[in-house]
Structures are given as C-alpha cells and as structure tokens.
Amino acid sequence: MPVLTLNDAIGAALAEEMRHDPRVLIFGEGVATKRQDLVREFGGRRVRNTPLAEGIIAGTAVGAAGNGLRPVIDLLFAPFLCYAMDELVNSAGKLRFLSGGQFSFPLVTLAMTGAGWGVGAQHNHNLEAWFVHSPGLKVVMPSTPADAKALLKSAIRDDNPVVFFLDIGLLYTPGDVPDGEHCIPLGQAAVRRAGDDVTLVSYGKTVHGCLEAAETLAGQGISAEVIDLRSLKPLDEATILASVTRTGRLVVVHEANRLCGVGAEIAAQAAEKCFASLRAPVTRLGGPDAPVAASYPLEQAFVPQAASIAATAASLCARQAA
Image 1: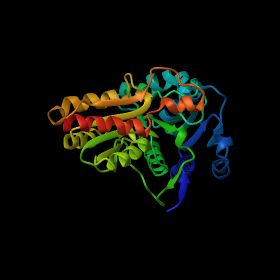
Image 2: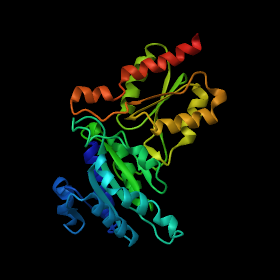
Image 3: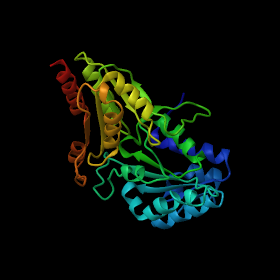
C-alpha cells in the first residue's frame, strides 16, 4: 500500500478519474502550475490555469456541467468562495431542482481551509457550514489521504455539485492509500476508535485531536469513541445517533466558529433523537466568533486541542459519576 500525502492523494484521484472518464477536466487558480504531471498526461485542454476570478471560474464550471462535462475547479482558499456564492449556491445548487431533474450539475469545487500555514483571516476561514446550509450542495472534508482520494473519486462521479474542503494543516501529512479502485460513498462516517463511555464527533484535522484525546482518556479509565464525519452533507446521522445512544455522552469538535456551526446541528439531532439516552449535556468545542490571527501560535490557540477535548470529555463522565 503506497504512502501519499493528502495533497498527492488528491492528485492521484484526479488522474484516475480523468483516465476513467474523458468528460472530467480541472481548471482553476494555478492548477496547471501545481499539477504539471496532469498537464503532461492530459494536455492543456483538460488542465487549465485561469485568471483569479472565482465567480467566472465557478460560472464556467456550472455551464460545463450542465452541458455534459464533469469539471473540477480549484479556488485555492475557502474565503475566496465568497466571490463564487451566486454561481455555486444560486445556480449549481438549485438548477437541477428547478429543471425538474432534466439537467444535472456534476462539478467539484476544491478549496483549502483551516489553520496550519498562518495565512491570516482573509485566507483562513472555516465556512463549511455556509454550504451545508445551502440546498442542493454536498460538502466533504476528509481527515486522511486515503479518504481524500476515495471521497474525491466519489465526488467527481456524483451528479450533484460537491464542495470539497482540504484542511491546510493536513495537506502534507502522509498516510497509507489503498491501491486500485477505491471509493467511499458520500454520507458515510468512519468510526476511528470504538468506545463505550463518551462519543467524540469531528472532521478534518480535529479528528486527530480527538484520537489523541481518546488516548489520554484511556489512561484515566474512560473509553472514548471517535467518529470522523468525512462528509458533512449528506450527514451520517445513523452512525452518530447509534454511538450516542450507547455512550450517553457527546462532544462535537470542530475548528470552525462554534456559533451556528456543523456541531450545532449534530447537537440538536442528539438532543431530539437520543434525549432519553443522554447521561450528560451535549457539548460543543469550536473556534471563537472572531477572525483568525496570522500568528501561528495564536492560530493554533484558535483550534480545539487534544488537552481541552480530553478535559471536556472527562468532565462529562465525572458528572455522571457524581
């Protein structure tokens, strides 16, 4: 099994899907410069740099998708999606519905997000909840290279628009990636660690913080289950609710602003559907309602860390014991 970084796993998925389907092409900000291996194999007609004009890039992708192609676009940093909101939300997300299913819009939008590079607030803003809240769009954010490859392949083959977030802090983290054809259906979470006392739910880089916290908790005699959402929409409610029903405790962790974040939806689902099983209040850990600092230490302080995750989970278990 080869070892690839998450960034290389994305490149491998693109290459495999472009070989698999001649309708797949990629264009966007710097893609031909960053992925010259794709240019060499597939040529400039299918791998193109574009001007820094996110709305035009996204609008072109919507038109291409509506006319039978399967475009992948790279808009670099997540805040740049602000310039493409009309095209992605108001066109790609709605036109299949408005056409009564006569048209499909199979396009994937790549964007980097999260802490790790100290790029400042206008380049680092975890806004995935915006797109989860937008009807017609699917939203993905993997935490491992293997999942990045498998989920991107599924996203490219999906007949709906998919916003695919790449966590900056994980881009060059290596991991095992299966050889051959390997896809993960969108909407299928992964149980990264089984446990019986508390459920930790997360996505992106904070999954790894939850796994580290689970190790700490194990030393305290607390068994934590760690769920990696992988796909934010569709959301694997069944896996989450089954775990919370069994453990009776839930901590939802993400780097994005805690206010109105994905964690709020998960907390509401647990409160509505698992209330009788809860042994402690549902708890959310997230970033503050503030722009991210460019300072690397301050940026890291913005993100929930393993120590705070472990302390929060331990406090929920202590409440029950008391």
